[in-house]
Length: 519
Ligand code: PFF
Image (cartoon, rainbow, N blue to C red; front, side, top):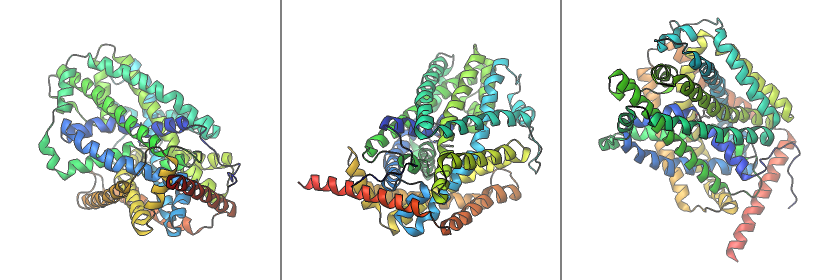
């Protein structure tokens, strides 16, 4: 079979380039600020059991699923879903839409972290890190509508977007892969130094005890299991369309399952390392304040921008520790952000037959402009929090449910995907893989329903319905409608030809490997 790769389509030159890029996407803020607290809240050491179960039975199997989707069709998310079934295309657009939303606000968080690298050096927050962050830095008041700019947030965000677009313009191999190859090892070294430093702080051991003391009774609580699945999903960047897009840049013959195992285990290793470092530091802070570790433990924005600054003020060598900590957030965040912005760039490139540079400038630039107009405003900050909650709890989970129900159950594509994975990979999958995907589907449906009910009955924090209605439900509704509308637009003939050629290549590969096996 002649190679029909188009000149337009980019590639990762090696499997290691892909692995670094995929780890770069997976290792993000979720590993550093989400995992430690989720573990602590959900049974401590005992949480490792549901966490590993979720990783092995849902996370890694779904990673394989998305790799196969992208690799077999050599297409972006919408195209890969269209390949699975004509009517499945909107699922790909929905995942792409979620990626756009997450990218728009994730850039803001990286921008804050960049500011805090420098704030750390001067201990800018004085002795009240909380009011410094919310009032002095973000200028947040009551939830409401105001589009007044907050320049202290705007400037670092502009820098972040310039870096991101610069890397993306360099292309998949020269930009994304090369950047990840440098910054992921750098991140690991810097983070390891932080963890070792934190372990030598007085009180560190109390923090580790708080994190790891197992509460086995927690295992009987379904919420703990949901938390484990949620963490694995977010952390592995599953169901955002990222893994489909990255796998589509791989060469025809690439060991997909082997790569998936490396990515899955590396991501969890980093996460556990982060748990140790963060809780060692929290143990120090609790003992310095004479309170229990539980009183200082939080996650997300509260941990990074209030908890850590307080800690930095209290510890010897705090400014340097702070600078490196926020630098780690910036590096981890940047390699994740490039992966998410590439999703719509590739999807719209294929749908509208755009040249590489054009789509990077138009789509990436468009996202940057929306992000820069919306996020550094007072309204934007409430929007950020709400979009984050809905995108992760409804959007990503919904996207994974649709993938399994439509592609797996209705269109019955699992056997073909499994055959594809086995034809190119060293680690072979059996029927157990398909069973695991189906069980994951059931678990996810349960998670999705529970979450929808919780948002409908309890709302979100004390946010007014106007905010949750627009940035939460409204955002999901707009994405759903846009996904269907986009699916009605015709694909360029050339894109479809390329896809058919890719599938023909894949089928040839699958048949070839089957024949060899039979011989
Ligand atoms: N796996 C990423 C994390 O743990 O932070 C999830 C992610 C978030 C990926 C945001 C990409 C992104 F832009």
